[in-house]
Length: 511
Image 1 (cartoon, rainbow, N blue to C red):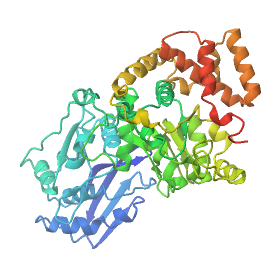
Image 2: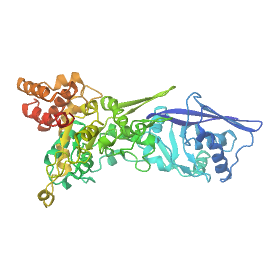
Image 3: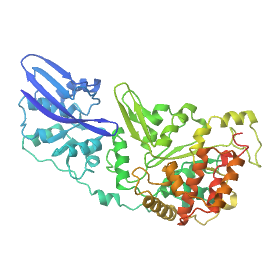
C-alpha cells in the first residue's frame, strides 16, 4: 500500500516542501531513497524502537520510502516523525484521512517522545504558502512556528498524541501567541544602559551617531578605558526592530536552532565572537552550509573585540559582506544566500602593549612592533568602517561621581527620530533604510554640499590622503549628524565633526 506524508527541508533561510512516499509490499527489506544523509538513514532504528515501545508494529515487510524531490539533499533527524507516521499509515495502523493536510516534523526518542528541530519558522511560512491546514511539530518549537498566525500550529510531546489525533480519539491543542502584544513589550529597562557609563561624552556622541545612521565604528584605546563596556551598550540605543526585521532575524536563528521557547525575537541581536574564530564560523559555510556570526548578527550588532588579534584571513573575508549586506555561499551543486546587514563595532589597543600615546605609561612597543601589530588590519577593511574614535581612560574624579549619565532610553528617542527621517527619505528604495546603506548615486542626491563644505572636505582629503571610499563615508556620517539635529542641509560643522571620526587615517597611526 502506498501513502504520502509531508515534511520540509530548509535551504539557506527558505524551506522546500518534501513529499515522503511510503510503499509497503511483499518481501523483506527497508529501502530509503531520495538523497537522505546518515541521520535520516539511521532513523529506522529510532522509529522501530519508538513504535514498539508504544505498542505499534514496525512492519516486517518490504518498505520503500522515497523523499521527493529526489535530487535535493535531505539532512537531519527532523524527518523521524514524518517517516514514522508514513509507515503507520501505509501499514494500515492509523486512519489516513487527514494526513495529507498537515506538515509533520520532529525527531523521535526511543520512547516516542519528541526532540526539537531546526528551521521551524521557515517551514511554517512555506506550509502557509502551500495551503496546508496545519503544522505538527515538537512542543519546544511551537511558539516559534505560531508566529505564522494564519496557520494552525500543534505542538506535541509524544508520537502517541499524533496517532490519536489522526485516529480521531483526541484533539490537539493549537498554539496561539499574540505577536503584536509580545512585539510591543516595553524596552525601558535594557540590561546594559549608558546611564552606567561615567564620562566618555565624546565616545557616547560618536556611538549615538553610529546608531542613528547604522554606521560601522571602531574604538581605539588602552586596556581598561571602557571599550567593551561601551560596545555592549550600543544595542540598547538602537531603534526597536520593525516586525519585518524581527521575522528576518528570527528566521536566521531558527535555521541554526537557537530559538527554542522564546518564539519571535524582539530585541536586536548582539554577537561577540572570540578572536580565535575561523573564516567559516564567521561568514557561514561548511559541508552543509549554515549561517555564520555575521548572519546571526543581522539587524543587530557584531562586536569584534581586539580586532588585530583576529586572523587576517578572517577579517578580509568580511569585506564583501560589509559592502553588500549579504553573503552567498556556493557549492558545486547549489548556492545559498544569507542576509548579513549588521553594524560592525570593533575595538583595539593602539599598540601591542596597549599604552601607545599615553603620557602616563612607558612606551614599551618599538616602531617595528607597532607596524606589525597595526598591519593586521588592512586599509580596505578600515575604509569600510565609517567612524574611528579614540577612547581615553576615565579620570578618578569622573569615576567617583554619584550623578548618573544620560540613560539609553533618552538617547534611543533621538536615534529613533533620526532613523524615521531616513526611513521617509528612502521610501522609494526597497533595500535602503538608513544612511550607511546609501550607494554612490544616493550619496550624490542626498548629501549635496555648499561651496564652504566642499572646500573644507577637499583640504581634509588632501591633508589626510583619504581614499574615495573614505570620502563617501564622511558624507554619510555628515548626513547622519544633520539628521540628528533635524536639519535638511549639511553644514561645515557637520563635515568637521565627521572628519574628526577618521582617526586611523591620520599620519602616525598606520604610517
